[in-house]
Length: 208
Image (spheres, rainbow, N blue to C red):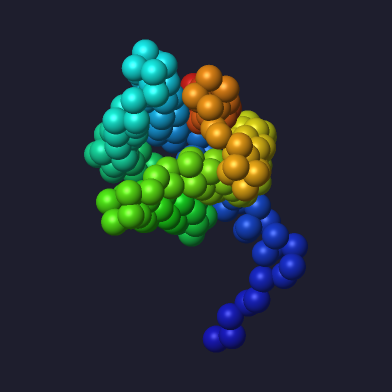
């Protein structure tokens, strides 16, 4: 028996339906985004305060390692609970998940490279880590926002990317990333990327 082929209109309807379903399922993930947003923001504030209080003692920068440790433990637990509520993953869900997995793994790799350079040469290149974070994460968020048509994600990603571009330009021009001006900008970027969209997604989830 010959299988019926989907028409162009039917194919578009299937794709649209799949994306809409992914958006509905993704709305509940605002909690994970909020966890990362508040985690990064709180650690950044702690580093900022301690650097100012200690007059630039660099050892306080080790507090940044709390982010991958805490986030790496909390994310799989929260994601597993979300998956139990949602059921079987769709193809669109897998694309969304892989986008953030790639971003997360690349962040981890960048951190390892920075650590290796620090211990092998004694030269600090952590400013490159900050720049990479403010490029990779915003790009991923913008892609996610465009994919599920969520304006809060796209707008937040654009703000984060703007800060990332400023950071890259400052590093290229050898302008020091001063604690007094860069840390507030970094915090604002993550609030725009994670905290505000996370609350918007949660609010939409309650309405659903």
